[in-house]
Length: 132
Image (cartoon, rainbow, N blue to C red):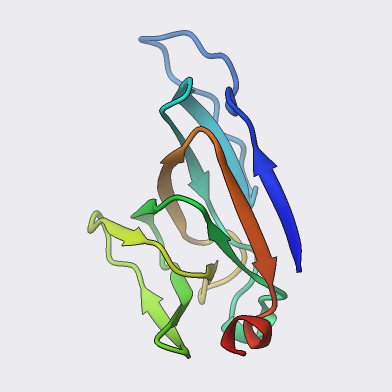
């Protein structure tokens, strides 16, 4: 198990009313936020199957996922079991349990917009550790 704490402000400075930069083929890119409130980023996993996920994460706050393009599936721990949750285009999903994601059509072939708090802690464990 490892733990990471995110402190505010946890996002890059950007100019309002201008397009924000987007980096291709990146697992997680925070693009902007509101200090002490929220931040938003793009999530595009490298893994292509659940068995390729070395660990799942759980934040001390909820995360909102919205699939923007491609296919992306979240692996979540729910009621002591692992469940695959395929995201649907433009359908928001609020995640509060341990999770990670994969793109079944190839690395970075799906992208979700993620909204989370600007300050939180995250615990990382293997799937089997979360199930104990």
